[in-house]
Amino acid sequence: MKDTLTFILTQIVDHPEDIQVSEETAEDRTIFTIHANTEDLGKIIGKSGRIIRAVRDLVKLMAAKQGVYVDVAIAE
Image (cartoon, rainbow, N blue to C red; front, side, top):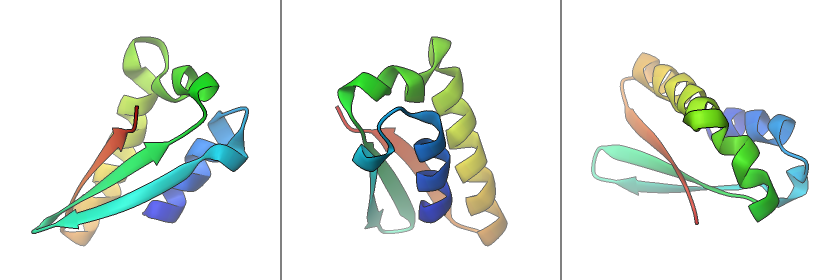
């Protein structure tokens, strides 16, 4: 899932070399935190948050197939 998330994000942004996804596992949930160039945050979030919402839905769907809980956050 982390690799898929990284691939999707690198295709969206202008500075793909700055994309880093960190993974935190606590109890029964995993949180992926996106670290990106500040110029690319607008592209990741999208108009009214549509892009990040779609990315979250996609990752959560992949996680649900595996029976785990995953959330996606953006580092500020």
